Image (cartoon, rainbow, N blue to C red; front, side, top):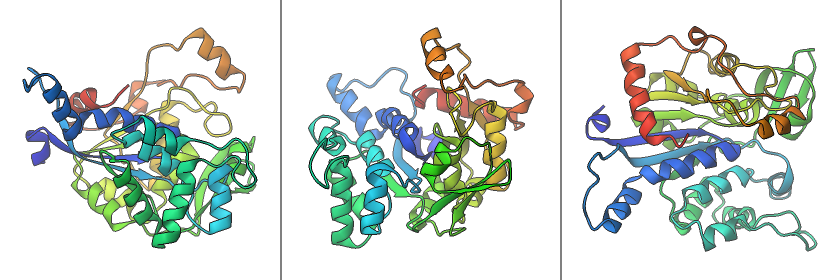
Length: 329
């Protein structure tokens, strides 16, 4: 693609939860606007070895949360859950000082207000004014001067349903994350909701697509169950990267290796979608091990290199070079 040769890239980051917003905070440092500011601060002198920069950054965010402030607003106003989207808006904001802190401010008291964040209420108000959640997200992004575009994975009012290993079914994201069972398969209710056209167009034009980090079944896989998204990823000529979590997660991925994560993603996508995976091989601190051990969690490992991916080595080598400049891990 011409973007790679010219070192100007369109990057699409897919996910949800805190993982996606954390990734976006790192990626936005490589957007054209951020690099221009860096060059100006250096007196206009370009960097001697200028890394690739992002001419367009798009985030595709899952919208299945049904707990906390997002869940309350969803029930009371029949709107999509704003929490994950809000975190992404803040993560991409040019100004992470006052406006971003305002968007993240959570009311600690007040009848009806306690537990809500200002950003969630702001998105709810804009949705009420415009009648369109995706338009409310776009306007909020303009107000916070984000360095990218944010698209909900779908504008349909969806719920998650998990088929557990024992054959039982659990409905709702909050109940799924609280379940002690082993998740075998995930579904959207209603199934195969429509995506935004902008999402499919961005994926088709992308130079690099990332999925993760994030909760395997409640942040990542829901995006792959939206009609057209997995097909668009497979058909895109972009380099596709799975950014693996550092640790397993209670009630979602305990005992799963990196290969198990990839297998679950591919199975729900209806076929292999990744060129390669980024996984941390450095051991975590004893303090972190002890903290996660209380939940039965441990560091995610790649048991055998050949378990991960089988792809064209030249393509993988090029992708690793590209990603090493841009991913903040």
